[in-house]
Image 1 (cartoon, rainbow, N blue to C red):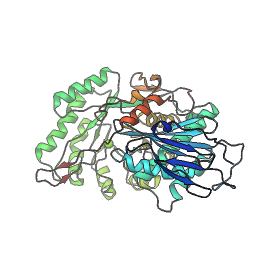
Image 2: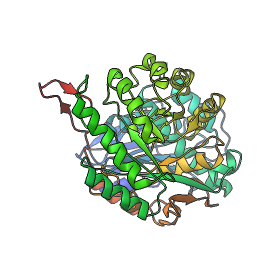
Image 3: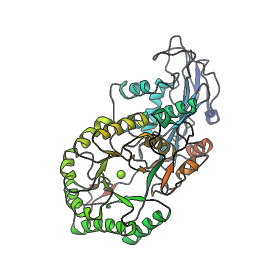
Image 4: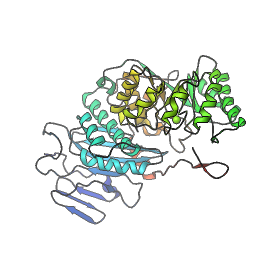
Length: 454
Ligand SMILES: [Mg+2]
């Protein structure tokens, strides 16, 4: 029997009232009543589509509908989502024992459908024991018959992070201890540099090295025609040359093609870039062209990296078989902590390295670090502090204590803080949600008006 009680959630301030234990939920003047009806799956707070969403536990109704439950186990009692600038979303999972877990379920530019997917999954999770993470992962990813894709995988990812956070907090240990313990004491990270002109790149790389970073990443090009001009090729090479001049031989740079480069252009560029020895070239082509990967792997000595637009271990199999050297799953897109560690293990079987994609907020970064501390074949971590996307809000705006994100020589240090190791500033998150966001990526076009990859 569910024991979550009938406390009003904070959403009452926005017009929500619900007596969960009493089988009644009132919302916007309508009343749903009665045993056997659908639980209060989505409560929009007022008329704004940006408002905080709450999904609370359904009323107890005899035998539990899902799996085994006992009155001794902790129960998930409330799930809320928050849109937070610049382009993120947080999920807060509360239990009847007061332990709260946080996650970041989001697809940048498609936050709203991910929020809706979280609400659907919350119908299943409410009233469940949060400790059964793997069983919940199986049901959430496979239980709806249709599976996969960025929206569902990202919704699962954020909820999975929150469940691991709860488990760690409940046991008083960091998640990486639950995953087998640490294999390293610090996590090397890279910083983003923007700019298109050589002097802007030179200044940005210099600033990051002076901040202590030992590696940076930048875009390899802007919009590029499908068969590049010599000028476009030279502009790409000049970026790499400039970065290498500033960095010297002891520091690294990654070059992100961002899926903007056609297979033909990638085949041309990779051999020319090799003399600048980038640490990797990222998304050398779109994930639409896995059949092009073997040729690109053999086109130069540059390690190829990809994976931010792949969502399951199965989707990484062909790239790894093709010789991709570095996998870059995003912990908020690819099924969370549970799937990221499995992708890392798959990569290990191919001698490939893990470099998690993470241009997101503090919960996603903290979750990535937990995997990185326990993954033998971890290489380097992306992080968003100072990234050009962070307009109007920054990663540190949402944490009560910035210490876990203090860089030491370009690395983040291991701690024994429980759960994900991050203390979310709940007040800041709730305030951010009241502002909301509707971030969308730009749509680029070629000179002739045709669509161009961004
Ligand atoms: Mg990228």
